[in-house]
Amino acid sequence: MSIQDCKIIELDKHADPRGNLSVIEGNNDVPFDIKRVYYLYDVPGGSSRAGHGHKELQQFVIAMSGSFDVIVDDGIERRKFQLNRSYYGLYIPKMMWREVENFSSGGVCLVIASTLYDPADYYHDYDEFKSVVHART
Image (cartoon, rainbow, N blue to C red; front, top):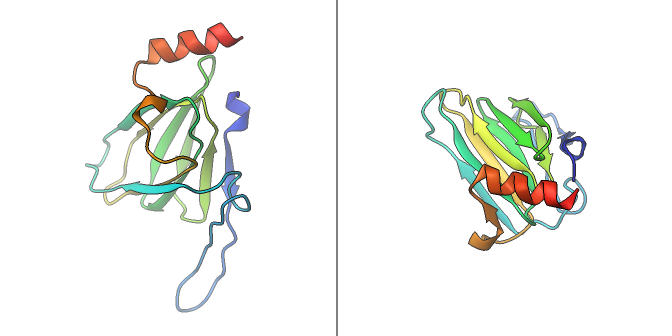
């Protein structure tokens, strides 16, 4: 996987005077089966979360409210995406280091995941993550 595999995906937006609707279906709107959904909220404005990588987990990250930045890193290159619309999401493939920062006040980060929670799937040390990436290349 490389940094070019990370991409913004625009979800269908069904406009209605009563409020808009967007739908996310596994293997249709996101390129994986959906196994888990979680969200970050009440994060103090300007704060950071989640400096880690995953061996197998793929993610789709959406700013449900407010905005924040997602930094993705493939061990060679880093890229920052600003998320601020609930009908755009960032696809993050496996073997990416990610950080979420610069939360606006009231920001809500929704994460759709391809696997159930597995502590063995995590890299919590960036140097270890980078050494695994460089050993594969």
